[in-house]
Length: 63
Image 1: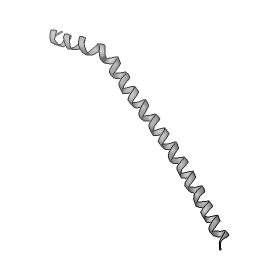
Image 2 (image 1 turned 90 degrees about the horizontal axis):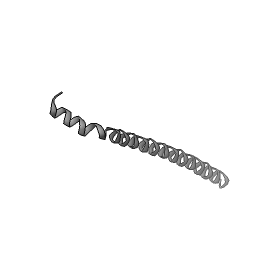
Image 3 (image 1 turned 180 degrees about the vertical axis):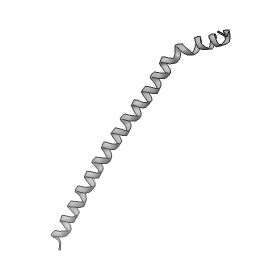
Image 4 (image 1 turned 90 degrees about the vertical axis):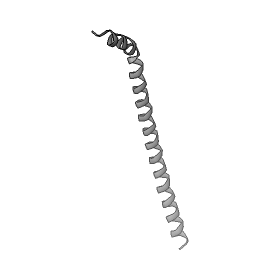
């Protein structure tokens, strides 16, 4: 093997687990963030539907 490549590999390969862990960590954080946002969006949609129903009921009472 080329001595320069051997030196590069000896420098890069020990850091590989840290790079993989960083990528996995970033993906986990992104997935959790998207999950939290989707739950909040569903909750907001439910709240808006309840508000629309309450306003419709109020309008029907005042007619």
